[in-house]
Length: 325
Image 1 (cartoon, helix red, strand yellow):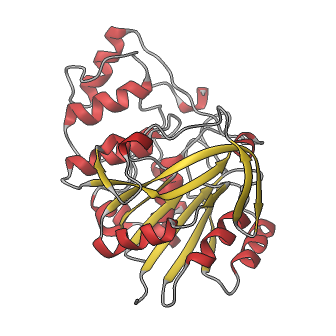
Image 2 (cartoon, rainbow, N blue to C red):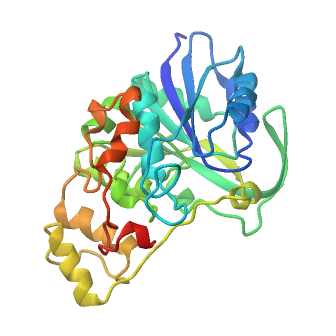
């Protein structure tokens, strides 16, 4: 069987992302002729980390270790008083660096279970948008990329599991696209201007992208065979970036929605930033990004630093100055 071509983006900001687990679990699954590059987008970029992970990939797959592009919420260019989670910006960094026509995103501190790449190859060949399954475990013991033992009680359950089928992918709604492991044609993601940085500091950039993909006419497929297992300990260990989910009084919430051209709520629930993401994407009915201050397809690796000149100065949810957060 002839090989396939893909980029795999591996974003991390963790003290210990256990990249070797991922490398050791991916490499044996690759077939003859598979042309795979892995791009580690590192929010804690250093030469030492890069050298360690290049050794883990050597002779098995191509790897590039790159810094996350500037963000107003974390890193050297931040406008906030502390570091906040900015996964949309980090994922968009990976899209800029990706050189293959199909792109996967995987979480850090994970092991790809046997069959992950087989299912991924099918999605590449059909150019489908696919979202894989995940489990979270405590006390993971991994040997040569194989999960030997773990303890999964109360660690985290894939809420979509009952929707899936062990035999192959099933179609799901856009809101079921989760960031633990998913893939899509790069050109399709560029047409939507990538991940929406309206989600930065809040989270939800994965399912918000899924809804936008669905609004653009794309089908979303959930494939339980594309299963990864994540370490709950490492996901909690020394991660400096936190999310914020601020609330507004109902009247102020509605006024803010009007700034996005939305006059009525589309979902029930609290008047907080997480619900506003849903109200905006469903209220506009648009697959376009609302918080990106650039056109992703025009960005080049050499120009990422310059994007800091166009940072928003206020939080997109409530207009609070970023310097006060």
